[in-house]
Image 1 (cartoon, helix red, strand yellow):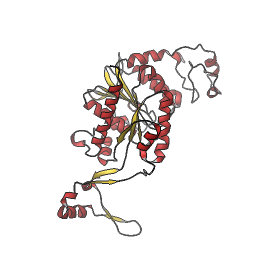
Image 2 (cartoon, rainbow, N blue to C red):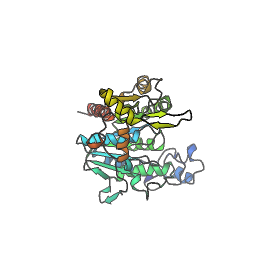
Image 3 (spheres, rainbow, N blue to C red):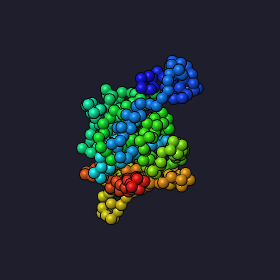
Image 4 (tube, rainbow, N blue to C red):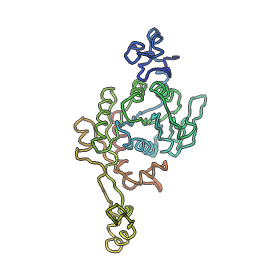
Length: 353
């Protein structure tokens, strides 16, 4: 338990050996370290000083959260980082989803490794002004499962914060796993003294997602993290009609045949003005009012909606920015850009003059 670190064999909800309740709380029952923790001298965690020193070169810190998995939070984190870098900011992206790291894939960095220097761990760089840190760079292969209890996850998050050398950067984007558990408590605890600009919470429109996202909003309020706003992702499937696949049912058994070429040829011949029309379809039930209604009820900002865009899905799979080049997403990029511009403006307005 050197430097107050949580031992690997500690119970799952260990309060930490420096806590006043160490060795005494209900979560300590049965832990092999219980007696040592109960009698050890208490004091401030010296690693918090090291974290504060590292974070002194980071101007703004943004947490990207969601109470629900599978809502596109990591896709949003990656595109937020691409967008900020595209605005000529110096950007760091920290992936603290220990069991399901997505950033190496979503930024086309698979196969890269972390290097160390006398300054600390070096991020893996997508571009000169966009660096990434993830446990995905530390695994022997991408299929390797990370089977860790809470204390070991927390120790790695602390190590990312105190040992990674970002240099002078404008934004640190932290992509967190879904939920309100150990990783979330740790990142807030470790960064609180250095100042967190706020959290962006990502959801999809249906109540199944919003039920858990409300808990994430409540978590932020309880731990004192400002909610910069909520993003409603996958807000309807939207794509040019020319990109839609048309199928014709041939029997009651559900067998179908692709008639896309026939339909598009017919449109080009008889209604060419419709070929570039956007086709929109509700994928998730939003009869409960979606994220916008939730934001009104909970008193937090609604940043906007991003449609479910196959082009964006492709950009994420290829690890590319959706804002430029051949991967520019005609449907989702404008929505994302508007949301990100709001976030930048909110942070700028709240920054001390």
